[in-house]
Length: 186
Image (cartoon, rainbow, N blue to C red; front, side):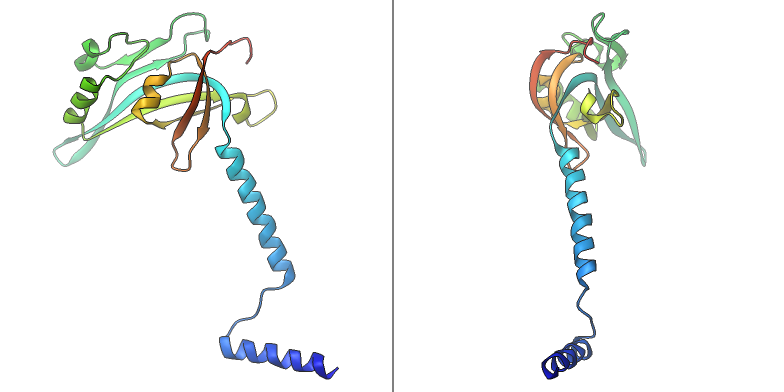
């Protein structure tokens, strides 16, 4: 009994000395459970998924006076119904119409990249990927549109079958391009 009591008094002394209690076993185990679930959620979020490219766009920002304004340079989306025809050009800015060799399959050359950088304060290359793995329910497809680097933007085209993952900085990483998506799969 004395050993037990002396342990109690030592722990009381620790509390008095440092002003804190040791967390209970339940608190530690509960925290580990929450951390494990958070880690699983992050793993599922960042895990590569196979899907199709449903959109490509170039979004730009420029300064007008003291205000930062946004505009689209080009936006290309799925044909309707998906896969039935070439990708659709939803928007192509008049100032940039002659700068894309094939607007329905846009690629940003080095010279176009330099021109965009000179005209705009900020340029974002956006790719949208849809995947059955990202669907909220069984049998649904989830889509994610996010910024990519110019290299990934140039590697993929709308309708392509890709392996991609969401990144921790709200972007998208394209790992592989695997031909064209068969829209009979979705």
